[in-house]
Image (cartoon, rainbow, N blue to C red; front, side):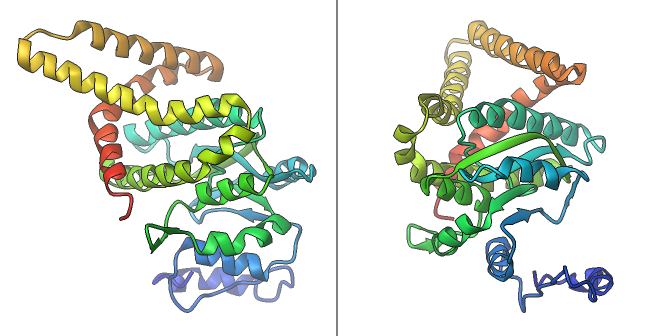
Length: 302
């Protein structure tokens, strides 16, 4: 990718130099993930393209399991289940690992029942090359308010697949372990990029919803309006506390109850009591992620 540390992986390149199955592409400068992907896709010849992020390790059976799903010609893309390879490093990585489990096994698992996973995540996603070739020009030239877009590649490519009429699927037993942020500031920066991407491509994908199952309309509305309603509730509770000097018990108890129901269901489904600890994510969500999402919405052109 033309990064400054390219010398560190030179021994890896050298070890595959005489393998006719492997072609290493070194770009003259670091032009970002999207253009690196496009360079590889245009040089590829196989029927399927597997995207794996550089900080991700895939299980030995991931390729075969994703290929099995891609045998259906109506499927344009399929993603595996993500876990945090460093989940034991800190309290934050443990929370993010649970967040990934919920995102995959609640959100994506529900969406795949209707053939429309709304974002095939970059750490482990397989695409049909013939579909990619139809979409590459649109993918390469994405603009937002007159500026080229240089983040949110995974969601945008998934939306383009759905727009072209292909199904997108989730394969829960294709496991990929990826490195997640172990400090709060990098985590919030990551979430800021993802929030901007979600808002941008939700606007792009709204016209697709009438042609998809009605559940997906409910899902998209819930994901975008849910945080807004939670933010309004939180602001109203703080205002009540400040103006009347009375504690907004009803709001607090409702949020606590909803949190515990969600965490208990996750613990039951996953068979792991640690998911009860995901309740710690709620204050992070209310006091850090919600303000950050509001900032993302106000700075979509950044």
